[in-house]
Length: 343
Image (cartoon, rainbow, N blue to C red; front, top):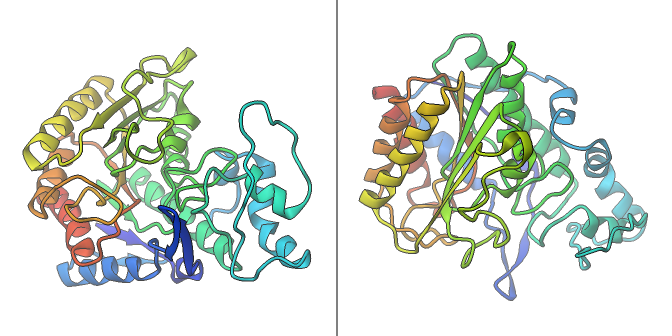
């Protein structure tokens, strides 16, 4: 299985984030990708390739033009007006009827963000751009006939909406990949299966009114976990997309057996949809002890997850999302990919 990765993805290096009421070390650290790369090389999974540049068009097919322009220029505008060079930290967010689009860099930071974790720095745009290009390259690889490809994306993407960043995410890599695959032929259908600990609110919102992309997500119940305001079981899609959105909000402490049972149910739904391609938002923050999760999956579970996904017999694009417990991070990611390949 080919892995796509760009060293520019390490250029996004916030030092601190505001989490649980205090400033803490930023968890989406560049070291995450190095740990995964080391595990890929040790497992001899396959070649690691730098992504070709497909330009802005695939990003614009998913994200609003003014939002993309904001991301590209935000840091320079922030510095020009005297902002702290450590990064853009918004302090005011529009809610419930606050619809005015401001012009000052400080105000735009809140207008285009959903929380305090998507910190924009000098290297953020280049990192997010190359992360998205990895997703496009992996999708193109599968379009050209590969059974699977892995996009080692960082920053991750599934919380990014069409017009807002959040949850460490700036560009929605999984949505960009799914859209690229939808455009690969006439009447193409794509299933996006999100197995990150957190609900992929951005991916859901982007495809919520569409029937050509079926979004399914296994995640922590939003009553207790981020992103709190999406991910309920009754969110089933709207309009043309009615019935093409399926959420599995799960209880704290869920273990291997129960998780795999729910995954099997989700895979059965994918089979019924009969897509041409599968995109997997691969988060391993479901692992026991992950600092952002409360599930209790063991490392053994991830190879079984890979087996289950392979049994769908679909051309599959893996998109890296979360996973922050670095001790087993690479092992767990490779477990899914090797499990898929061995099946």
